[in-house]
Structure formats: C-alpha cells, structure tokens
Image 1 (cartoon, rainbow, N blue to C red):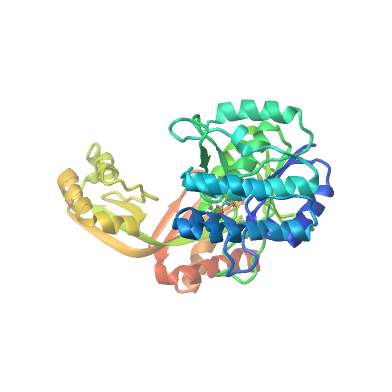
Image 2 (image 1 turned 60 degrees about the vertical axis):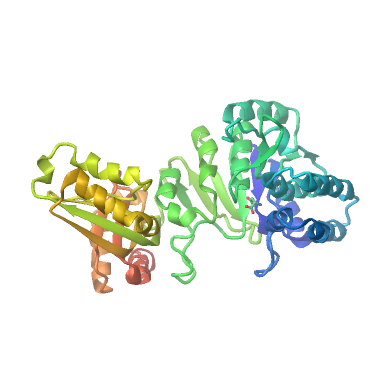
Length: 437
Ligand code: ASP
C-alpha cells in the first residue's frame, strides 16, 4: 500500500497544524510522499503566505525588506514553536536577490511551498525534493506530463519517504512556473500517478464534499463516494475543495482521491472514484448551482428543416469568444445558455450576428437566470426522480424556466430565476435528503 498525501494551506498555517499533520502522517506508514501547500490563513482575516509573496514581489524596492521580514516571521514562528534546528536565513538571502533581479511572479509565489516543504521535511525527518527538479513545463508553459512522469518516477524509486512541495515546477530555461491558484492539488495528483500510488489523500479543512452548499443548507450531509463524472457535473460546487485539473492525472490511472479533514481525522471524508457499485445514500449525490446566466432563445418557423441552422447559431457565439453551458431546443426554437457577464460585453455583436446568419423570426433574451445541477448515478435506476424534483419545486412556488437532462441520465439541469435560486435548492435538498424520498 502506498499513499500520496497532500496538505492544504490551512492544514499547515501554524505550528499547531503542523503537529496534527505529523500525527496523521505517522499514523499510517503507507503515507510516504507528502505534498504541502504554503501556509494559509490562521484566522479568517489573516493573509495567505502566497498572497504575501505576490504582494511583496510587486511592491516598491524600499518596502521589500519589511515585507520579506513579515513572511520570514511566519516561518520562524513555526520553526521556533516546533523547536526545529533549522535556519532559513540563507534561503531568504537568495529569495531577496532573486526578487531584486526580477526572477518572475511565479518564482515569487512558488517560494511559499518551497520553504514550507523544507520546514515540513525537517520536522518529519524526510528527504526534501525540490519540485523544480521533478515537475516540468514545456516552452509554451504547458505542463509536460511525459517528462515529469519519467523523471519523477525514477527519482521516487530510490526514496522511501519524501516531501515534494506543491504548486510549481520548472521551464526548459530553468525558470520557475506555477500552476493556477490552488495548484498544489495538481502536484499531489501528479506525484500519485508517478509513484503508482494506491490512494491520493487530499487533506483540507472540510470533511469532504457536501451534498449542497452549506451557505444555503444548514449542515448538509457529506457525500461518502462520488465518481469522477459526477464530480465534473457538480463542478460549480467542487471548485473550492479540489482544483479541477487535479483529477486528470489520477483518473486515468484509476487511483481514487480521498478528501479528508486535518482537523477531524476521524471523519472518513469523500472518496472520488472512477466507478463504483456502491449506491449513494440518497437517490441524488449532490446539488450545485450558480447564478448569473442568460438564455438567448431563437425562434424561426421550420427551423428543424433548415440544414446547418444550429451550426450557424453557434458560430456567432464562437466568433465572439463565448462558450455555451446548455442548449435546450424545441421544434422551431433553439436556446443557448451562456454566462451573463460575458454576454453583456458582446450583446449587440451577437444579436447582429444572429440576424445576419440565420434571419430568425424573433429572439428572446432572458437574463438573471440561475442554473441548478442535480446529479446522481442513482438516477438511472430510480423511477420518478425528475417528477419528484418538479413537484418539490412547484410546492415551493418556483417557476422552472429550463430543463435539460444529460444523455447519460446522470444529471438534470434546471434553470430558475436568480431570486428563486436558494428556495429551489432547499426544496430539492429537502425532498431527497431530509425526507429521503
Ligand atoms: N499556495 C497556492 C495558492 O494559494 C497553491 C495552493 O495552495 O494549492 O493558491
């Protein structure tokens, strides 16, 4: 058994959190490769070290020293409280020189993980492997999966226990590049693949994915097991817990991800798997949604007989750089649902383009729409799921503006007005989870 374990910023925000992390690692000897983030917030108004580094790098020369000192203090507080025999003075001298030499914003941000990796490796007594030596990007700045996998797996073959900082790697010219924000999740996934791990544990500050947003539902149930496909369908929800790109490296290898809570290690969290025979506890696995969509509905008699109609409509959106979320259609109507903020910037160009391309009888625009995705592998084998959703919404006096059931029978997407968003989610949650219908 081999596990790769990633700890997020809040799990490593101070010495107390470091102790919890060490207890978790030592509790299971198969937890061999550790991927840390940079120290996160210790309290809600605190600043993440990554943000301090971005700020420091873009600040004036005369503010550089005091800002670097504040960052150094964050690490020294951890080092002192853990009573480590470690000094980061030399490291900070190098960092200062590189900041002055303008080594790049990505280099600056990456130092949060780099230094945290050094501290954690020292505390655990594990080898430190600089991500710059094992994670690679190509000339264009795209992640180089093949090179990384071969170098990293060779390197790990000789090391039993190691700490590999998350979030960054190196370019062919040896400069440092980071993934997008939250990217340590991706590093963990890449390490899990290269190590041929049995499990990728992602330790954070929540006990897994919740069936619905806790800002809308009071203490929602935790999802025990979710498939990668379900998670993608719920991506409006998952984004804050796990970086979207983190699923690709492990998914192909069939390595499950387990989301765990550093502050409640006894909770089993959420297992993300390729496929499972396990039924979800409720008919649905999760509900997620987002406000701020616009529906552009195009009407034209005999549209269904007009060859290339759909293509010509979509071409207009494509030319304006807008991707669509859904496309519900009727015999003489076609709707395209897009993000409102993007639509507003290009409204007139799109309308003119549609008139020119397909000469519609009319175009109707509905703004301020919210989309709600009800997702569950259990829906396929359960009759009446859609019926229950719509009767719950009717009881809650929510008007449904759009319905789209994915062809995989894994999801039902519902469009409601922005103001009905929370009422609709509550009604759906209540019928499936509270009432267990
Ligand atoms: N420290 C980086 C960030 O704040 C990466 C990460 O935490 O995953 O985005």
